[in-house]
Length: 342
Image (cartoon, rainbow, N blue to C red; front, side, top):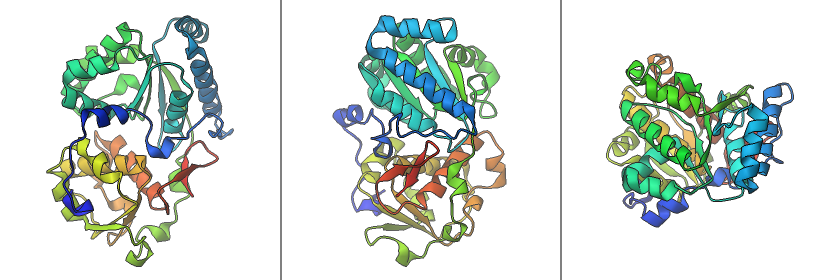
């Protein structure tokens, strides 16, 4: 990643890892008041109402237990926000985190697995234990290691009284489907599924609806002077050499990136690393200008878009549509519960 800032991508310190367990800059001010559901989809209204009540009941453990029993008929340990791209799930998750009273942590799923890699399972568990809320964005199971790891971590945290609220594009009983031998890990997957009450959130992807096709291929001159310009092939080569946990240390110093000579990414390993980078760019509201590669929808082969990682690729494209319209580092909220550029 040296090409991006002219310096190495340093690994975060222990203190930086802990400080990062909060909503990213793009959702630092997310609230229930700024989430305005699309009333054409009652599930958006329902999700907001449930989470508002959940956060309000978090002032004491007894009140929270009473809330679970009253709202679900049994003591549930968490909410699973399931829905398509661009329906405002992350906004609701961040709003729940901000409104929650008590010790709490927030992380994307990939950040959580990276945290375990950096601190060890025992170290990560010691850090997270005692929290009354763990909010996890983009919950997904990509491989057997993640499945066993997160199943163990969730069990330990739930036994300790930590409540989980997560977002995902995949129903909990279908996690890992098409990605690895999920049938061999049904016990872990089904155990995770039983830990949640599903809140399905319907709606269209506002990012695609509001995207201007004539901006798929931005002119270099239209980018801010501070934009870093890098060819896609060069970027992909650098991503192979850098662990994803280091991405934040580079991205947080950027205002815009112009990715030149864009083309279809043929290797799945390269495509998945690129998706992870886009997630971090999105978290920080960094404008992304794809140049020279035709339509944005051709960035990934059709076989990838129909395969086991289709949710990752769909989310990546949805976020690139959003970032192509970002003109400043800050992101405002739109009227459909999601982020929209100023």
